[in-house]
Image: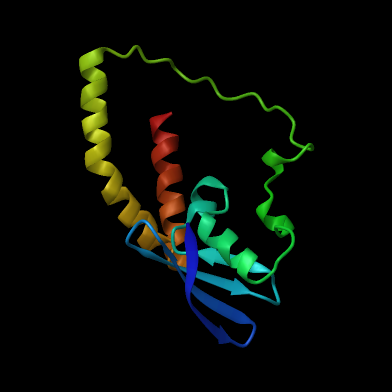
Length: 141
């Protein structure tokens, strides 16, 4: 369960510190009342296209009755049509190889999350990381 720990106003921008009851950690959420734009330090929307519970807590706190349109992605609407996915090669997984894959995931995931967190702090670093990821995936495919 999340709750608003701190709220500060700067003109039309409202900054929140959101905390959880169960876990240690705080997230910074900025909500621009004029532009109806919200951003959370967890970057879940920018990463997965889904609003996080921190942003939803701010909407509830600010008595926003409906999610702003820019946060409803086309893929979640009736207008979304099926798109053929690129050919994805299927990998045969061996039990030992899966264990190694899990170990690699546990090792690299926290480091990647720190990179993502840093990259989402400004538009410039976000754009740079996005371009590098595109280059990586283009080479991989």
